Image 1 (cartoon, rainbow, N blue to C red):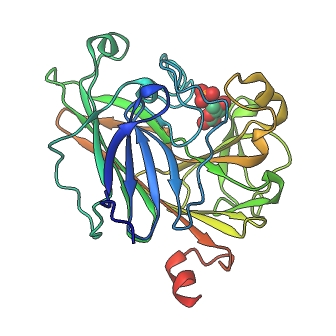
Image 2 (cartoon, rainbow, N blue to C red):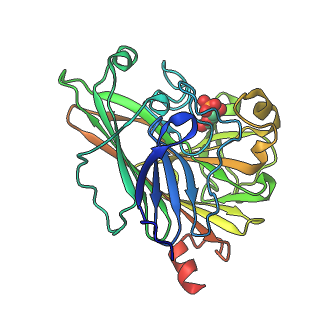
Length: 315
Ligand code: BG6
C-alpha cells in the first residue's frame, strides 16, 4: 500500500499555472476544479476513466472560458441579454469560500470545495447588482459529482435582480451517433437554430445526426444519456433548474471554433441543467439554489428505470 497521505482535497497548479483544486474519494474517483471560472474540468470514476469532455484545443488562458468540463453560465445564458455570451462567471477568478454556510448533505464525503464569486467594480459597471455566488463542488463516496450553486442578492438599494443560468456540462461520449438521451421525449423546446421557435419533441429518445441546439422546457428532475459503445449511462439529477439545453456543434461549427478540434464533436455532448425560459428573480436578501448531481453507471441500466442505485445494487 502507498505510504503517501491520501488527500481528499488538494490545492495545486493546473494548466498555465492556474490555481486548481483536486478532489479525491478513497475508492478512486476524482474531480478537478479551476478557480478560474469556478470551472470543473475533470471527473473520473473509480477506474480512472474521464467522464467529462475537455477540448484538446482548450486554451486555459483568461479571458477566454475553458472549452469543456462544466462552465458556469451566469448571470446570463447565451445571448439572452446585453452581457457577453453565457455571462461573466465563467471567466472570472473565483475565491475559496473559507466560511461557507451549512450545506445540508447526507454524505460523509470529505472531498468537496466551496468557492465564492462576488462582483468586482468592473462587473458592477456591466451588471449593476450586488450578489454572492457560492458554489460547492463535491464527490460522493460512490463517485457521483455534485454541484450546488447558491446565489444571493446582497444589494442594499432595495432592488431585485433577475438572471438566467446553466451548468454547461460537456459529457464525454464514445461516438455521438451511438448516443441517445432519455427524459426529454414529448417536451416543448426552443430551437436556437430556428430563431428560438417553439416546437414539441416527438415520442422517441433523442438521437443525433446533425447539429443540435435546443432548450427543452419544464424538464423532469432526471435525464439520462445512454452511450451504447462505452456501455455507460450518465444520469443527470437536478433541482431548481427546470430547463435542459442540448448542444452539439457538429462538423461546420466545430471547424469555426478556434478552441475545438474539427472532429471532437463526435466525442462530446452538452446536456445543460438550466434556468433559461423564466429568469430567476431575487429581492435583496433572497437566495436561489440550483443543484446538479451526475452519476456514471454501467449500461446494464434499463430504459425507463432512472435509478442508478437500483442498477448498481442489482448487478
Ligand atoms: C450552448 C448554446 O449552451 O453553448 C449554443 O446553446 C452555444 O448556442 C454553445 O453555441 C457554446 O457557447 P460558447 O459561448 O461557449 O461558444
